[in-house]
Amino acid sequence: MAPFYGPALRTLHEAGVPFVLGGTFALAYLTGICRATADLDLFIRRTDFDRIAQLLHERQGWRCMLTHPHWLAKVHGSDQDGDGAAFIDLIFNSGNGLAPVDEDWFRGNGQAQLLGVPVRVMKAEDALMSKAFIMERERYDGGDVAHLLQACAERMDWERVLARFGPHWRVLLAHLTLFGYIYPGERHHVPGWVMAQLLGRLHEEQGAPPRADMAVCAGTLLSREQYLHDVSQGYVDARLASTSTMTADDVQAWTQAIGDRKAAEPPVPPAGAPPAPQVARLLLADRPTGRGA
Image (cartoon, rainbow, N blue to C red; front, side, top):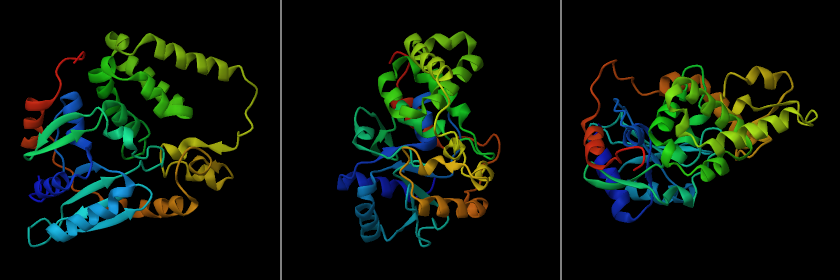
């Protein structure tokens, strides 16, 4: 755990800037699954970025870079602190532009202490939405989705989940179907009315005449790389024809960054590496216990 994470959290907390803890720490809090991590994910409102960047620069001397303006910024520690290679991700949307952080992200969160700082933890519903669309060749978050459902399905706000997914409900249905396959004895954790509603939509769509948007490829909402061939063959990129906030310039920049991905990735902790002790502390002290909690 990089030494500059604590001061960063404290600076934002003392300034009253809202943020939500995500990533590995949120997964540990929500599911009890503890694994090593090389970074820290904080979800913020896009409108707060400039204020955060100014605060961290003035009080700590750190630089904030708007790495991908449609969804992601990074905070880099100073070389004097020995944190030159460490960073914090400031996330205000999803990479596909479907999940902008809004006011609802900051309501009803679990509370925890991380490095001595009180933090809001990402809600299970938002974690589900943010992970459900990650289906790259090198990264697939379906396992995290299944574990979120296993741990939290019985206390999720399913009306909110359905509203979050909106027209992308087929992605939700796919994950719920796989959950029932992965944990056949726990299918009942997902309310029956949710499955009935989604299957009803599926049945209705299957019986409807062909849609006018047959030349759209929504695969780009799941993977920025694997469906570029389809777009090159004349399919309309769904990131430019759906509820995504992405612009053509965003899509171009995000595609160009594919080649830089390997160089930009943080080092992967070795298999079997012990989890960060802060995660264990957060779990023991703060996470809800029992599916009905």
